[in-house]
Length: 514
Image (cartoon, rainbow, N blue to C red; front, side, top):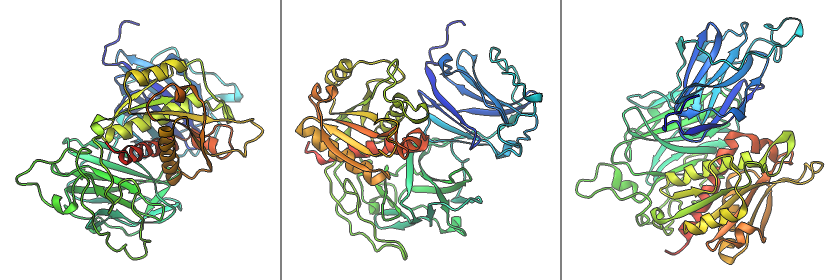
């Protein structure tokens, strides 16, 4: 193959096809907008990833059933193509294919259920299985476009899109404007959320909140959502009939809207509070002063919390920067966080149930952590961006050379495979300043994730002893644990863990005098 264009330098990091859910999940090194199409001859679902290179090490996989196989090929010098070879008996309706981004680097392609029995591929008679020819790139031209936009299409007013789903752990009751910002009441379990920031087709800023294992309350209408309050131009609530079901809440912001802090509450509900400005100051565009720089301004003055909506427990403020508090607000633009995904390359780290490898899990979590911090204006470096072999000494040396503000090493734990009852979160430190950082991480993750608390401990790990800045090492679960291993394997859980670690780091930074 000839030389590739420089713009296609990012690679496809990992992919997995879940036969039980009929779902493909893949991760790339940098952001991508997949182009998904259906070909009828041959019968294939084609996913093109512009600007992404394929990695031969990822290989191809025979699946069987409705999806016969998944192939990864280099369609041209700047595009990776993922081809799902479909069974002739699988009548795929393009309108039922759902494509959405957990982040701009991790995507889900959800296919509808097949009426064909799982694992039975009628295209292979007499049980004689023939692996498809993976050596040739598909030359079929996409015939039917399947909507592959990461977000719902542009709309001119609030919208609620409902879908029939099974019972969920959390039910979203609507959106309410308050004197502090917005409150999203929920019933049932505490909401599990993923947050990221993007722009729509008109380059308007958007905040996207995905609620996992959640459903929109029956009868909720778009007319009940706030109209043009606090610089939020439009609300869009979309129900996805995935397994588990999910809700996407999209805020499209006016040009004068500040950034917003999203705070899920253990007692139920989600607070959306503006960063660096009181809500009363953003009811209209400022006339004489420029907008403050996000994350580099003084905290807003204390505000009295309004009474909770009927039937909703009064939520407690966030300890770091919740409504009604006046935490220190450091200039996060002057902060550098060094993230250290453990192991990598020839060193898989701990290997657990089903061959689950520590190195892949912690790398994915670290990328989510980095994205969440960068969205808050924090500079981030990583000791490894992909599956590279990095020794311990260069990790510490990189943190020192960069003059990092904090150093956080991310690992997954393991014990003997016969002790699958051992599960939970541990965080380690070496110095006194590291102990404060470790406590902030442990507290935030436990308040966000349903995990067993195995405590904060002092240890003499190399990367903790050879870094002069506050440093902590967090063990995010056991790859050998019956409870932890399935979660560690789940991309949605990885995203939530990454965001929890990021919030723990932010909590620490905001607690420090600067």
